[in-house]
Image 1 (cartoon, rainbow, N blue to C red):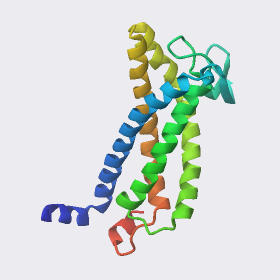
Image 2 (cartoon, rainbow, N blue to C red; image 1 turned 90 degrees about the vertical axis):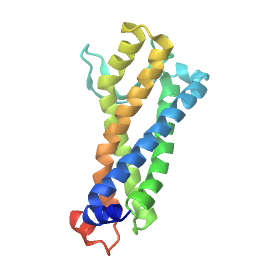
Image 3 (cartoon, rainbow, N blue to C red; image 1 turned 90 degrees about the horizontal axis):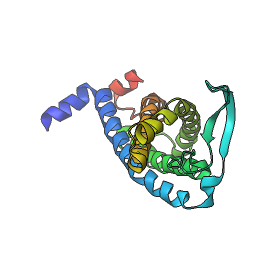
Image 4 (cartoon, rainbow, N blue to C red; image 1 turned 135 degrees about the horizontal axis):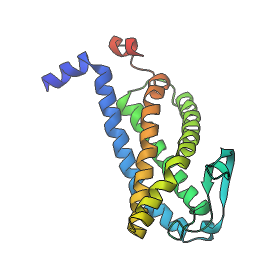
Length: 200
C-alpha cells in the first residue's frame, strides 16, 4: 500500500495512463457486449435494406466511389454491408460507450476540476472528428476482415461475429491512442500536483 502511494507520487502520469488503459478496456468490453445486441435489433428491421453512403472521398482500387461511411444494403451474412441498421448499431454503441468513458475518465483517471460543460463540448468535437477518421480507416480493413472469417475460412455467422468484435477492437484502439492526449488537455488537473502540471 505504501509502495503504491510512493509510486503514484513519483510517477503520476504513468499511473494516470494505466488507469486510463484499464477504463478504456472496460469500455471496449462494454461495446463488444452492446454492439451485437443492437445489431440484432436493427438487423430485424427494414433498415438493413437501406443503403447508407455518405462523405465520398476518392476512389476504391476497382475505381468505384469510396465513402467514409459506406454501408450497402443487405445483411452482412448475405454479402451486403448491413445498411443503415449496421451503421446505427455501431454509432449508438460508440455513443453510449463514449458517454460512459467521458465521466469515468474525467472523475477517476484525471480527477478533473474543469467545468463539465466546456469539457463536454471539446470532448464531443474530438469524438466526432475521431469517429470520422476511424470510419475512413475502417474502409481499408473492414471488408478484408469480414471476407477472411466469413468466406475464406467459411465460418459464416460465427465468422461475422468474430469480425464484428475485431473491427470494434480496432476502432477502440484508434480512439484509445488519440483520446489520451486530448483528455490531458480538456481535463484540467488538480493544481496541487506539480508533477502532473509539468507533464501537461
